[in-house]
Length: 106
Image (cartoon, rainbow, N blue to C red; front, side, top):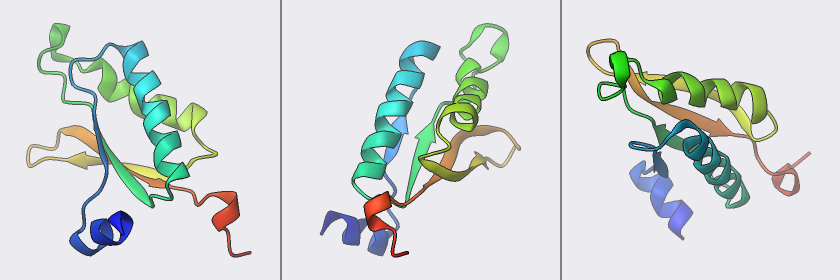
């Protein structure tokens, strides 16, 4: 029922990584993607921030999270795209998950 309501209202499960260090953020991302896929979620959103509070104003998670997904989550993730705000900066990403093997109609 929860999944149906989410789809009906366009609600996407979201992981907010603000304030986490790289290692902790990547661990949380791995767990979040694994659990979302196990629940059969078609897509999720990951918020990592723009890095305004980071040293030099460069967001470490903004680079680390997409890189980790590209290198390590290919079995779970079909594709992802960064979500840009009006200024062209990204602070989040939308992730489309692969269906679980037991959900595959083929």
